[in-house]
Length: 348
Image (cartoon, rainbow, N blue to C red):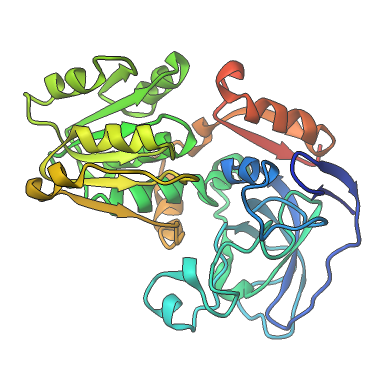
């Protein structure tokens, strides 16, 4: 088969590799019908994730069809259409039992293994360990283009942003960064009745999309960002500030927007230390949360997508085939210039 193989920083190739095979009785093999690219893939290609070594197949999101099942698999069969999420879980270890499969001990202490610790989903076929507890059946009414964004970006914005931020009916929410994950948070804040959702970004296209996705207000980044948001909240600041970028300055912006008793939900992946003004924050009873997605919200989100409550397909702005993988990466890497949110990649 062909797959996108990592060969060190700034080096990747769509090339021939051996087909995956059943290695453990809990495995299945999935023919990949749709995949996409995540910002984490770009971090890998920058050399930021040393655990990813030369020869690893990239990718950790897919929708596909099962072509082979291990002897211990009872919940799925050949021919089933499934969602392969970013997080793999054994379902039995302490962290899985606590609802934190992002730290599944059985698969190596971190649930994110595709394109990281094992071969990933940017390939014609992928081996999926612990299939019974990791895969999700895709309802007939949900398209591949809708389901693919439930593998990572939508659960991340919802779980690490909205749920961890403890958004409640009537809350005011600021989302700093209107990329795919920030837009996912905006799409799902409405499920908890936020009265005002303020999108903050430096890119006009993303701000336009944010309003289309449900933001009540948009603020373009500039010298008056904090003042603009404060004015929209009667001078109080927001109840929940969701940081969805991963830069020191964006986390500091989120911290400056939240009112006393509020919550800062950090979703962004930070690659450098951040110095927070704790001397000012402690007295304001501010809560700061952060974390890796667990994807335990997928069943709920699948129902909301199937029922038309979440238009997940809006996330996809560009489509490519497998043999256009390099072009897909170029567009996604330069998302702002290409007015791209997420790319949809299919065999043909």
